[in-house]
Image 1 (tube, rainbow, N blue to C red):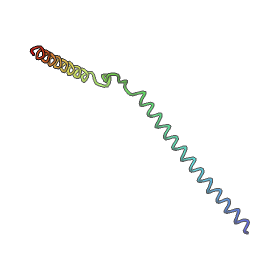
Image 2 (image 1 turned 60 degrees about the vertical axis):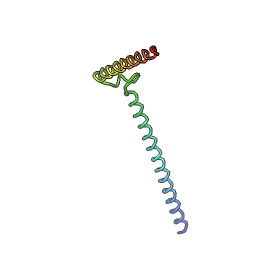
Image 3 (image 1 turned 30 degrees about the vertical axis):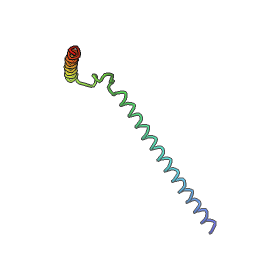
Image 4 (image 1 turned 90 degrees about the vertical axis):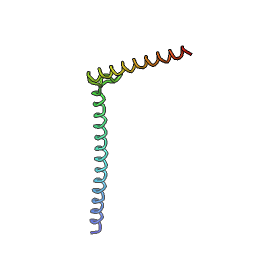
Length: 92
């Protein structure tokens, strides 16, 4: 009877060890799959992301036109201030 009891506990230990190893293997595989899917998702989103060189591709045409008008106004004001400064510098 003692021999059967040792065989039974050895079998139970083997089954528990196998279950633990199997669970660890499954967890490792699931983590790798999640990481792979995340990496593929990031790569796909980068492929479909708008190509931004000067930022104009991101704006709508109306927004782009408004931005261009504002830049033109700013450039005109900068030129006006520069001319004033040059006149002040030449008066001295």
